[in-house]
Image 1 (cartoon, helix red, strand yellow):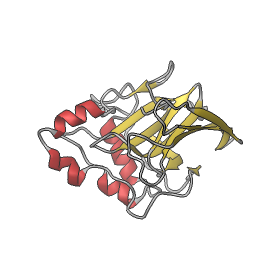
Image 2 (cartoon, helix red, strand yellow; image 1 turned 135 degrees about the vertical axis):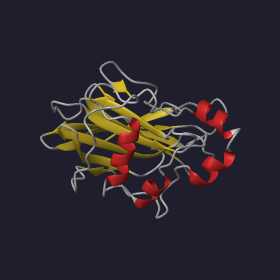
Image 3 (cartoon, one colour; image 1 turned 90 degrees about the vertical axis):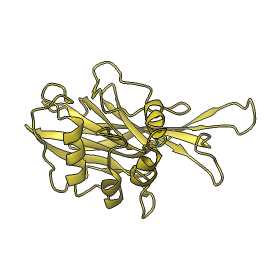
Image 4 (cartoon, helix red, strand yellow; image 1 turned 45 degrees about the vertical axis):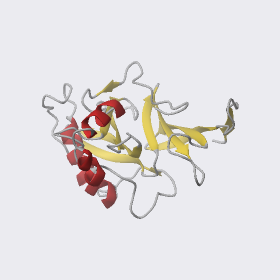
Length: 228
């Protein structure tokens, strides 16, 4: 990802759906043939504006997906298509994200799905990142906890773009790039990485580190730890 983003790739013990990652290179190549597909149908920012903060233990109704995966899934994990249906059925997900969650090209969704142990359950949790088609910017991140076979409960969401969530040694890492007025999308002013840990039945913030990027040529970066 960008800058010092922690989303460079899956870490040991974390399994990622192979078709879930829509890389910028692949998307741009597809856009050369079909620019209008993402210009009007790709995922975008929330119409009502960014959320004020992350939402932990969303609760609400429990979306369900089939426990058996098709060719896109892995073992007993749901496929990308099934995860997309689950996100669309989740009452905690904003209408803007649902309405814009469409394939960029063919059946390729701008969704990155990671399977791994975050909450200590008997079945892997799902970390779902929804991105834009045009430049793979993270629009929203969700975590679903397996309650029983084929059923998942929403326990985390962030719809404040740009955002990306991943699993790091059993913790949840949420990365955001922060911009000031006039900043181009390729040059954020700073980046914030927040670490959450599942304790009892909720995610608890453990640490937060903010990296400030210098706007001067050759300027140095400085990391500022935040309070837990």
